[in-house]
Length: 214
Length: 212
Ligand SMILES: Nc1ncnc2c1ncn2[C@@H]1O[C@H](COP(=O)(O)OP(=O)(O)OP(=O)(O)O)[C@@H](O)[C@H]1O
Ligand SMILES: [Mg+2]
Image 1 (cartoon, chains in turn red, yellow):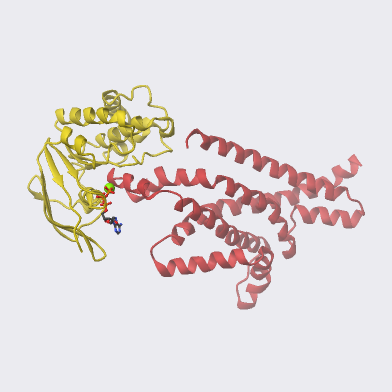
Image 2 (cartoon, rainbow over the protein chains, first blue to last red):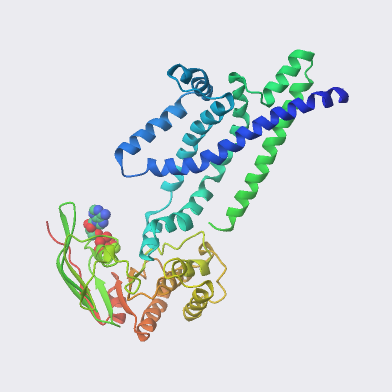
């Protein structure tokens, strides 16, 4: 059995690598984009607000699976063609940006006006106020909710199997079907657990870092 | 000297200040009193540029002055807010040095040296590396004052400096304000505490509600 496990492990790990890449690029892009969109959601330019609200409503109101299928199988019909991997990254970024934007919007709205006003009378620019005063406070507020989404993202990444990408889940599924054994799926479960454990650990550390002040 | 000439301030079609005039000579303490809702806070917000006025003129040292768009770092109007509005994510020292470093371009060493002088002067010694939530009400207020002073303001404004504090601390606030006066600081203090106002003020200004 150990022999079998070591035989299928390379394919599982290469699947896990795909999962990690999707996870990583989605976070790298959609967290900053989420901040930008959340600023747009609270801006005083009504058309911008409406468009972004519609976007968030659409992304949160439809399944991510549908969005993936739409980007990879749907868009080519109107001439927009993505490679499998690009389609997956694109759909994940679009989807997760919307969730992060909502979380950040709540965070920004929790900052009292007085913080902006005291920064203003101290002559800080808007950028300085955001970077040094507002964003650190927002981050502290949103870390727990962002953490939930990060854990979700690890698991959601398995949805890419519908567009034929070889991620961790697919690698396990293929091995199980071929060799008629449960072991690959058990290993897949263990690898997911390891990944969520690492993410949880890092998130705890971040939360701890922000516990220095209230 | 700061002069307000015929200042008018409306919210929608409600007039809060109408033809309001005020002179604040250098080094003096002006106490602004009046009933709740009269417009004392609004006046202070106009002077500090947080609200724009509908008409009238500000003069600072005889030169026209627009608080709402003023970017001249020699003409800072400092504000001590009623609820202090300290920055919770920064230590006491960083609350004080942030703006001098970012805005006045002081070096870290210079800004910290100046901050330390003010910290010692206002009796916050030893609190440098604490966060605002670890301070008492009186300490928070003194930090708010120090943070404003570190920008070398022309004028320092306070909104209800006694309201958030224990009554025993009223004396202390009086002493701080009078102590700053000895250093030639020009101060405008909004309060509804008549006794407090009389104890500190060179000039008492009443703001009355305007009947619609
Ligand atoms: N942003 C605003 N929009 C509309 N009305 C406002 C605004 N700010 C203040 N007001 C109104 O202006 C009037 C004066 O308010 P202000 O806060 O200046 O009173 P105040 O003299 O400071 O009262 P208090 O002693 O209770 O603090 C009030 O009637 C208030 O409702
Ligand atoms: Mg008031």
